[in-house]
Length: 325
Image 1 (tube, rainbow, N blue to C red):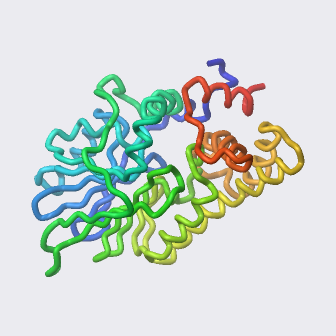
Image 2: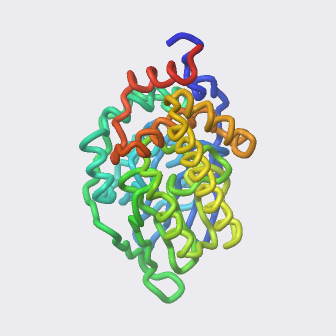
């Protein structure tokens, strides 16, 4: 790849040190500045992880952080969705007995998991330190339709529930949120972002607003977004949900106007960039995600229902078309 077609993320070399955050009794987030967030819940007999890190090497740092608060076995991993930056660290947790994902996520892995892995390694070199240790794709051992609950044992006189819900298509076809009703903590995966560029390259953008409405209806009091700081209080959580919707709305409106004006993909991209940069351009990863977002919006608005699989070759071709000189 020549310099003028390098991904924006290729120049991102600043290491981020995730911080362990207690969100509620026995509920923790492992929070970065703007790398993918993950977390865990300590139950009576086990620890449940919400996503992992991109590689086993990076996941071992996550494991070390978990061991500062509990020595209980880590038996379950919940996948909020399937992008390599969230799931490829799973093999670092050798006590795991179950990996749980929605049926939509299972289908995603079967149809595009390897292409997604190959693509993301090229897009995000910093996030795949130790990539050679990854033994293969992370497949769930259990999948569900709609929702399911994990019961984690006594907590404040009740059997604590971790409710997993596939509320609709959005960031991917299989998004799952992890909800703790007793304390109002929600792990949203990349359905909600907090002042970070919203990646929609594999999305169902038209459906996403409705999925966000379903997230809002839960009235979370603490929200761990896919990227960005933890949100505290119902007002902050609702604001982040609204901002994610605003980003997606601005994207669709820009591309729709470009298509109506007879513009090419490159023209639609220039229009979207001009329209969105004043409000969203300062958000981390905005410059990286926008070409992929515009490409998907352009396809969706022209009737291509399902996102086209990204390959490393397609990534580079798009970047050359939209960012090349």
